Length: 126
Image (cartoon, rainbow, N blue to C red; front, side):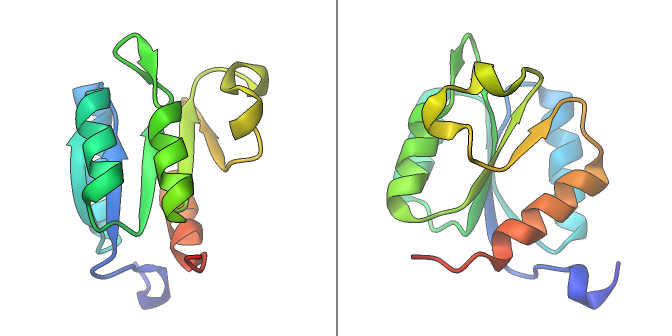
């Protein structure tokens, strides 16, 4: 991968409750030089890390163990940390307050994931 397409040392929170998908996301981000925070599969763990961990961006599966990750997105938004929402559902299923966020529709390619994360990491923190 070209040097300009790497994100050495940047920390990305991964919230995904399907182990195989989390492993593929992790492999993709590691190829970019990203340090993975997680992956976590529970809302409680995701909220704790969103509040406390030093992270630069996040990849959030919308549906987590029968609930959703909107509360995690809210915490990240409050901290000024960019994130992408991953969902197999359309825009209307995302809820009004998060429809403007970057989104990857499942199934998405790992290239699309990598491109999106690199774009998030270019976003200046507020």
